[in-house]
Amino acid sequence: MDWHQGNATQERDEKNWLIGFFATGERGANHSEDVEIKWADHSSGDVQMEWEESQGTSVSILISGEMHIHFSDGTAELREQGDYVLWGPGVDHRFSTPKQARVLTVRWPSRPDQ
Image (tube, rainbow, N blue to C red; front, side, top):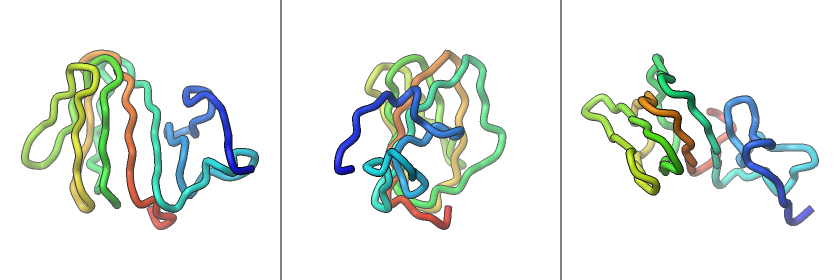
């Protein structure tokens, strides 16, 4: 199948990823080793406690709500629709959501060793 229409909220995996190397089966067009796309909804007060090291370059774009992306040397506060933060490989990060948030994250490349 060369194309696919769907719903990001319904089709994302248990970690909210919609497109990437891990997408298989009927969603063949969603399989990519070049890019990963995450569509995530976070409740107010969600906090990621563990630091995560980025394996590729990532950009997170706020769709609604408020999200803070914490880095070892500062915090990006995404407060208005369209606010984004971009970071490269090897950058430790985690998040918190003072208000319920919806965030679109794109990471490249999509790497099976993550």
